[in-house]
Image 1 (cartoon, rainbow, N blue to C red):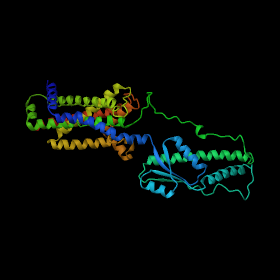
Image 2: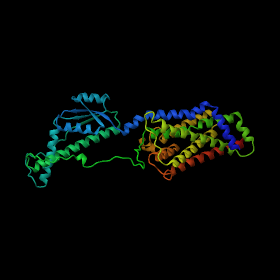
Image 3: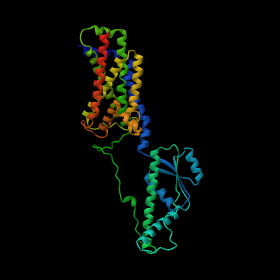
Image 4: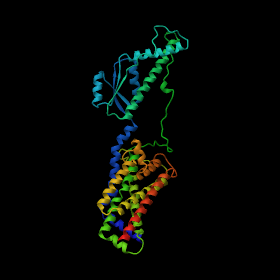
Length: 425
């Protein structure tokens, strides 16, 4: 009876508090929508790199044309032709462009000469040709092709552009070495049927994601923000929970309950059961936003995966942990100001460490280790494994057990503190 009476009382208190209703249901929905929209562009930047790069072709020969053709085919890099090197440097330094490729005079001729010398050196070492004083060997100074970067460029952009340019140059060198090899074997005579090989097509790389489902599943703004901010909202259940609990204590309602014979555990259990249910309603609403509203706003749809049972169990475990933490804050602190101040700051810290604001993989290594201690990280990892990796319930069981243990410990401490104060009073 006490448990049911407590649930009814908490329900009446909540529906009579418009501000609390907005904080629990409306604000989290607005938060997840805003954060998904804000972070959509950064997530796309990491996944779909597209750069406008200045290209200064001082060589005006075949090497420059091959570089331009290769980047045109790739589609990720758009070359902007500029004739003046000084102008290119000014544009990059001003931040108008993130990078510039500067091809020096005579680059094509120098590269042809070097590739020819490589083939000659091979023939000489194999005894198929004689060395003479006119032979120029490979230790000739390298070609000074410049790649200028904006100091504010993202490191992943820098590395991707450098790797792409190195790949293009490697393909050109290999192609010219083949031409030189055929020329040497034919004693320098023009070869009408010279072999042409597209080395880029010798090995085909097929990219895909390791997913059990056929659709393309990957981490994006929606897949990260919906479960992340859902848990953040669930942990903020401490606001109405602590507020009502401390208000009852200050108004004397809690004292009258203590005077009633019997254990005080049903009172705590009733509060726990009610706010546990509220957390689950929050979860359902936030998931509905991800599935139905996000596509309307031009974002990707939230992919839930196929393990519905695992999702439900994880939601219950997170709700237990959030409610247990809220009860602990409510019981421990004596004033609403103390409880709400400490509770809000602590939840923000746990969320930041747990990967709610930014994915854990972009954090420093030290913070990545610390984040393993945040209950929000346990829940977020479980949801990520379920939504994107198609994990089984057994696979996420360690994180679920941590959440349940956290809930049990916080609930036990709450009951102990509440009982201790009852005895003292």
